[in-house]
Length: 280
Image (cartoon, rainbow, N blue to C red; front, top):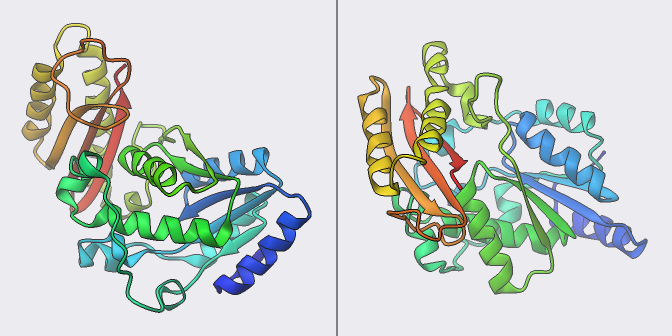
């Protein structure tokens, strides 16, 4: 595995590989790797000649500086995991390398960025768009792989690629879960044992939403699920919404809906968790 920390050496190496006709699959991460990441990487490795992974904790997508400070970092452990999936290139830059000058570019995604995560984390998706666009310019991959756990982020990245005419295929991959149903996340390791036991409640409640669709319209179903979360002793709900799967706008009924997703975010034991489930 080649490990680079500068943009120039990364671009030089990958340009040589592309000149030899190699297809590049790219998985951008913020480190603290787990099986969810590795699943993306295995698919990227299988579908391309070269697997490139980036590890960069992007400061400009954190609107909560405490969350940024607490974000888990262990590059040596991450490198060992990358070896297990036969990663070809790791790009692990410093903040100074990525942002020699303050990032000032502003993207607008309209209603897509104003709901759910966008409503509770102002500026978050602009920070995501800035770093993803920069990474795409550096790596110039043929395909890039993102997990569907961050469903709104995936929609934003697809819109970014479409608007900026970036020549990369975006591939969304299914959520990878622990045996008890909790969606895998780098933040899970911050859950104290007593809260980790309660965390599967999130997925159980999402499954209940899917089961109840046959009997309840979207509006009443949304309120029923909110009530279940609010009745939980330790879970502090931020949002639960049932949205269309393209523009992510809330829906009130199932009329002519071909794709809907239930999305949730909240706090458990001081750790923010998100999840989603496809309803239709």
